[in-house]
Amino acid sequence: MELGRALLLALAFVAVASLPAVIALIFCADEIIDRVACGWAEWRERRRERRVIARLDRAVEADALTRDIDLSEFDRGDRRPLEQLATDLRRLGGQRLGGTGRPMVWHGAVVKAYDDRLRLACRALDITEHLSELDGVDQEIERVRVEGLLHAAGLSLPAARGTGRRQQHR
Image (cartoon, helix red, strand yellow):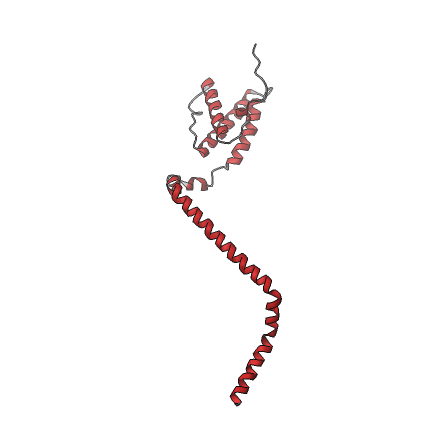
């Protein structure tokens, strides 16, 4: 009997000590249920996305598409960002096309710098160019061809869009 009273007293003490936790659980039950439900839904969504990506990888064979690409080329420290090359090409292209009244040495330096940036952009986008091998009219034709290919690849250049003026025939 003495043991039963001690057990009953211990249970009563645990019940009184647990009362604040039970009250907090009652007041926060909706928050706890909401967090559990949201966690469950996020887990299911992540699982569904992983399954869809795995199915797409199997269907497209993504590994076969990227197997031959050397990604270390993009991590080189001396490689200029394509956005910077595009900015340089726009600036130099505008100076090259609108450089009237400047000395020939200045114009030649601008054209050389423009061709250097064209070569770098072609290398970054894996476009074949022959600017350094040609001169004169052939080099101008190659420059127009390269500008067109860069424009088709998504690089917006003023020379590829045209200067906005109509050519005058005499």
